[in-house]
Amino acid sequence: MSAFLLLGLTDDPQLQPLLFSLFLSIYLITVLGNLLIILAVTSDPHIHTPMYFFLSNLSFNDICLSSTIAPKMLVNIHTQDHSITHTGCLAQTCLTLTFCGLESCLLLVMAYDRYVAICHPLRYRAIMHPRLCVLLVLCSVLMSSGHALLHSLMVLRLSFCRHVDIPHFFCELAQVLQLACSDALLNNLLVYVVGVQFFGLSLLGIVFSYIQIVSSIVKLSSAGGRWKAFSTCGSHLSVVSLFYGTGFGVYLSSAVIEASVKASMVPSVLYAVVPPMMNPLIYSLRNGEMKAALRALIRVLSF
Image (cartoon, rainbow, N blue to C red; front, side, top):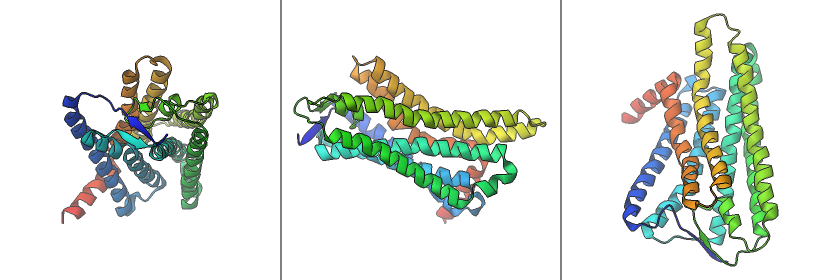
């Protein structure tokens, strides 16, 4: 098998220009917004803290995730050539899994950072020193890469001899496995067992961190102190809800709505395209320090 066909969201020719304009706009907003976050963090010494170090890594990961999916989709819509090589499809699957896994790990690391900042404020600088921050990011990269390589190497053992049409806008692992002629039972088991463990443990870690955070906040005597502590977590909670909410939407749609492939693509769009675009908006709108850093960056860039 030398190539697959990505059928996309719709085959209606009248909708193609609209889809191209929509996803091009989303992609440009995603790249520009996350790039501004990275530049603001690196250029403002006042926010050279662990929280913003992790945020800049999250923004870089969002650019990579969006760039793994959007350019190929835009080329397919513009040229009406929906083919993707076998190697290209496997590479896209591997990279998508890597960056989605890294997003989950980074959100867990950011939750741990908020836990230390609120529950152990006097020891925060001693615990979250630069070496640990770099080590946490490197461990996140290694774990997400290992998770993606496991699935990708298992796909390599499969043979694809018929039904080369992928009813999706990118090479999603579940859709690729459905095209295999050979037995993909072990692959499907890995998707659910390893995937649930990988993303589920990250979510449990985030939930545990916030249980500890809430228990510490309610012990504060002043309402102002409680509000200040909660406000530092608001942006992160919004991003976590968006990422895992759309992720569970994809999982449930693949399990429940198997008869309607088009219907199952809607949560995939939300999962793969929307969170990378919304993350910089959430952090810039809800975070006073980030607003100030972005204003300073814009003043510098305008001269």
